[in-house]
Image (cartoon, rainbow, N blue to C red; front, side):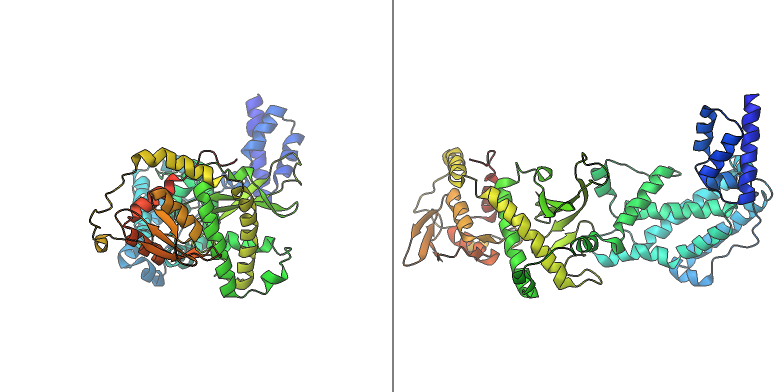
Length: 501
């Protein structure tokens, strides 16, 4: 008796849906309550009717399709072969669809499940979708804006036409096929853009085997939305910093001066990472930017950048007990400029429709905050203790070469300038000393550097701790007969386990 009552109620709900065409959940739930269902059935029905469109479609008959031909101008986009194959498949769709005209969608789907021709065409269509996407572009480079743009041309060139067809014929077999096409393209974009990044970050694996589950489709669409370069995070960052009052000194800087300052700050921060990165945790070191609005944190990363800057926002409106939430990150490149984490071509130097000089000033403002915070920690480090620990550990392994040993042919040593980066003079001397170089005072403000097996190198040593650039460092290493490999290995070994006094 209860089941009969349940079925009657369901039928009545469908009728209400058809008459109104669209209705809100609360109206339907109210209607169910009036019919006297108990709480369990009420909850069951509330879950069943969350998708209103599906409830309505369940009692709507399939419509007839007269013709379905892709406009000839689309052949230039698809190529003649794919264009002809797609038209053949669409004609087959029409024939199958018209066999089920007049049946409600639910009944038609049951009958279709036994139709071998339907699944054969469906698989052909999926293969064609893959070929279409694959021919558009086979491999993506996230640093190349032009390649990424090509993916979005798929939407701009052909999908609007499919969207129009779907809106006209939702209750047709055609709808299910085109929906499959639309389902695959976002997956293809996801697969060839940032799948690896997302799956590491969110521990989510999505593979296309038949249909993609609805929740995973939504996940992919959300990721594509985040990936859309029109919604880039750097623009959002600038909109958040409108209330920041920049100092008059910073306001007066021109572009070249701004670039010089961010570069110098970035080089110091990069160097500090040699000593601090192993024990520094970004989430424990929040740096306030705008009080009661958002903070930032810093994390070193030595893979194609200096590190990441995370932006943490207050959740006070929701719950004062909640911790801050990390919303997004930007990359700090080797020049000290902020870049979008995924779309690396978007930086504070070239944000569309933004005053780039202002963007660079905000870049410097935030970088100064990070610099000041890290400098306080760095100044507490006992550098002599670290160097002594390192030297004591490795002294026994140092091979002291015979001073009369013939000097190697330095011209045969190959140096890659990309392996060597800009560092301050004082830090370079620390590294050279740890390798085993002898450093002595020379004439006036000069110093003399020597290592067994190499030649003497004389360097100016003025009061100002100047930056030493890669070409000069390479020249020093060649003169001292130090390979870049030994230099970099030594640098990496200076990683203390205990940083603080």
